[in-house]
Amino acid sequence: IVWNPGPLLSEVKTKAAQKMYQTVTVLVNEARRIVPVRTGYLKSSLTCEVTADGRTGFYGSFRPWAGEESVSYAIHVECGTRRMSPRPYLRPPLETKREEIKRIWSG
Image 1 (spheres, rainbow, N blue to C red):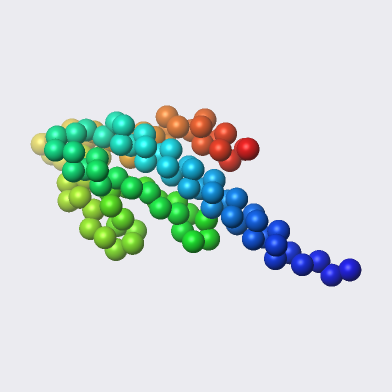
Image 2: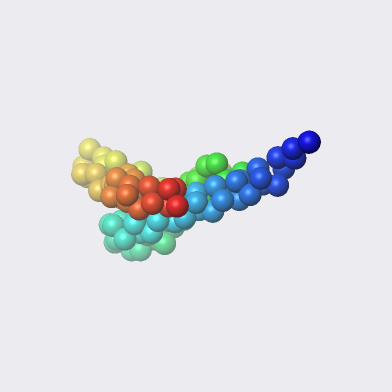
């Protein structure tokens, strides 16, 4: 008997990519909900993406992971400056949506 793992591995990769996309979508939606809004530009720039192999997901302002410029002040809002207190919107979803993400990956 010869085992051909191709179809199984393909299905696993597809399921993993779907779960990763669900995960980053949950995270970016929560980030959009809590991001401080003055003009709406930062909020509208928030996006997410999953790599072709489904192993890595990204979310943030535009797509700096793909070489795009993010909103120049996004990091200052997230981490603060000497004159401005931090108002994180990217990190909190990792904690507040933890249980929802666990459900995505356990299903």
